[in-house]
Length: 174
Image 1 (tube, rainbow, N blue to C red):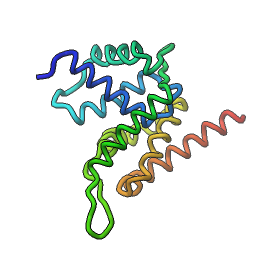
Image 2: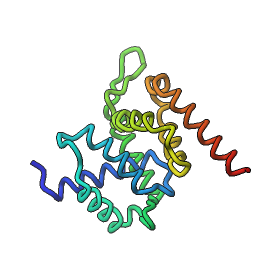
Image 3: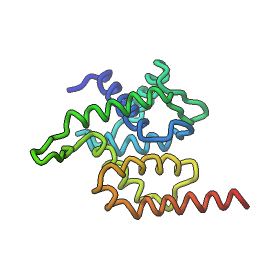
Image 4: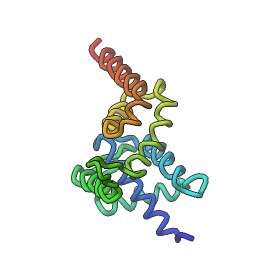
């Protein structure tokens, strides 16, 4: 059984992992919490992470200057984002299994776990997404190109997101 502090630390670490996939600026806290719930609920035995633990995790990250929250919009320091990304990549490197034919295969890596938990949720709400969320979704979609299974499965989502962004841009131009 995890202590309360361990649970909050786990949620804070999950926030950092999520931040590594997003555009570092202008992340609305509600969007961040929505995506984080998708990740944690897939990995956790608990049915849903408490709002209190999520708030405490965000406060912990702000306290240690790992991110900034102003007016319910989060920004992660680029160096923190890069280190979080390197941590995920290092885990992947350790989990890569080389074959005798020179090819390698990545076993259920953390990046795949995160994308598999977030992309279906995005797919469900792609037509209701607002402009401020779109840049983060496209940032996440950029990570799918490393995994052919995602490219095939979510190519329509990428197309829909790109089209929606073009519509937003045309509306701005008018």
